[in-house]
Length: 376
Image (cartoon, rainbow, N blue to C red; front, side, top):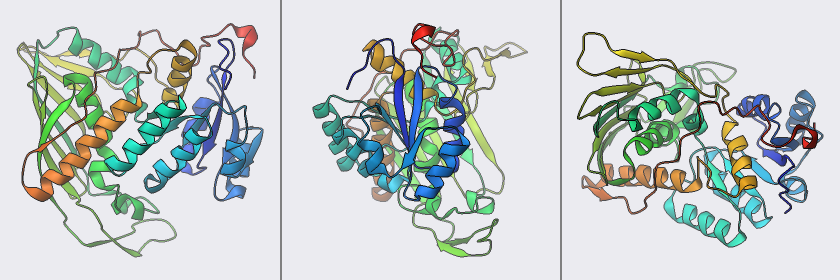
């Protein structure tokens, strides 16, 4: 694969569902990448998206993988086939940006990780909210010493559940989802950036109901099974010596979401919602009024990670949302599930270093290559 330093990298998207619109809105605006093909099991849906976003090609996934001009496959399929789809891309010599989670189990995740290493390609996995102005600003404050040494963390995500509003929520209550696997990556990725790698986990979990009803859309009133815990409480211990308590729940009628608080030796910092790309940071240092810090950085949303991955590939440097980070987060979630089932502490065997922060002036809509070489 030719990654000339002066060329945008070709992107192919597999999965033309609702989330693809958010990706396409941004990826078609970023000059370091060029969306060249959209694939879906429903080829008409792929064709409709290609026409809507002026993408030149559409069709099957096999057709996408056969195109030499595709450098990065953006995997927007359902969690159950994330690894299968990514493995096919890796075998075709393509880099991969995938939606969370990395996989549903560590065995298949390791197989994908090994295959990518053998093929000499990268597999990076969401969330790229990490690159947004909100979290970047909070992390700059934290790493700059605003609260001294981070000691403890608290995260809360409590909602009634997506069955009340999502027109097809069944997959969110199936194996590989639930509040831990669906929402957990945003919070756990943020905590790893703040404290470093998790060393062990204790947890409890429960399930309020064995079935739920779809609350909106054409299938409203249909009953479907709940296959996973819908409330998970976890205690994380970090290799650095810090700890964090986390709640992930689809069982609360009183919503509390987007809450990440970290206490240190000199103060407490409240992060913006880790599921968003913006939001203010609040620092409490014992004075009457907290210090409120406006976000500085990129306000682009999903797809930002693809642009940063393309730049990292071209510059031959580590990406800021590497596959190793998503693998470690998966390890934390799998270990949390095991801890809740066994009632015992579970060691997290993988490790990862926090990512380098972006310069506040970084803008994915600005070309990192000379304008005369950017193809539109």
